[in-house]
Image: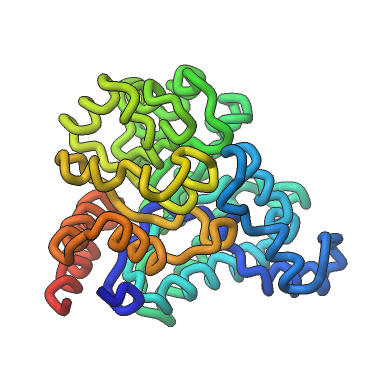
Length: 333
């Protein structure tokens, strides 16, 4: 299968982990921002996590440089636009991009200005390319619950105008869901859809709590349900969709090598899985690469790819018209 030409859908992609290295250098030069190097190869060394990364926390260190250049409306809009452009060029037809607005307030931008800028970049790309998108607002688990309330409150005016969901991300500790029950409940009340990073670092029980306590409709990663029968069963019974990111999962040591990844075992057992990049720059990947990887590692057939594509359509937070259009792309294969 030629995945660069096949229609693809991405449900789990971080804005700050997918900034073009060239853009970081360009903005840093123009605005006098100090970065470790202004040569493309050296900056890639700083941005791209190696496959032999030791942990999720080590992987997350790669996000500090992109955030230096993501502190103005113009830069946020540009970076959002470029991400959708890059995805469109490899035939991604629909993408949900997530980011944490509170990471971009260092130079005085309001949360509303930050969200507006990212939405504008996406909408501009939708006009120019054959791609549709939506934005997911991430709350940082390393911040107090009050910060999640702030994101939920200030983001609600964008619901139906480019923003569709709320997320919890960053370093994963056991039992984190308990801290965020109230802000996520409020988000659901306002009409946000809910996807939660959980089960990425050896704590399958977090997935169970994300579904039972937070009402998660999708789970980011969810690798470690394999070690928690209760979590595994609830994901399977409720058909909660897993947003899986194979390369990232090797880098963060959720799995030691690609052949150990549970994505295909989950798929064969009736769990709904999707394929995603997580972070295009930090993981040095694309959707075509991730699909190739899964296809080659597990001898996935074209029919199985179509099933995973349909999982992504159905699990997306897109409107009905967009979903119908996405289904039709499969007819051309």
